[in-house]
Image (cartoon, rainbow, N blue to C red; front, side, top):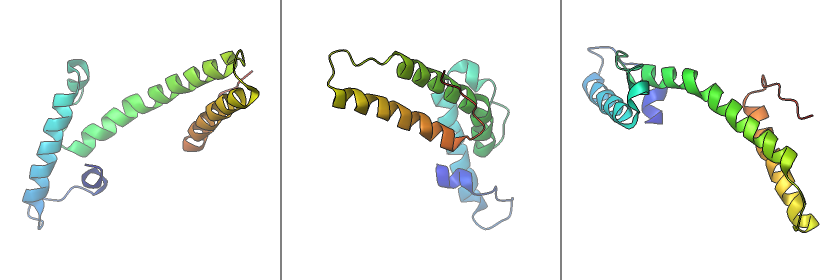
Length: 115
């Protein structure tokens, strides 16, 4: 699917258009059948799989990242050594920070203070 979505739309009459259009229709049908009805309704009138994908990405990717970053912040702030060895505790905290850092790299506009 990713390769199909990465290529620009072919025009009617272009070589390979019919095969591309059939594949696009199958991808759209698959996308619609895997969505909950409330989300599906926002995409029903989009005419290409890429348009559906871009709509979903713009709508949901930032909210998901923000929620996951918030969860990471909470985990980082509430992680305690407790009964763990120092090695286990350090590994847990380092893993949380590495995951957090990956979000920062993916989107350097995120301003998320851990204070």
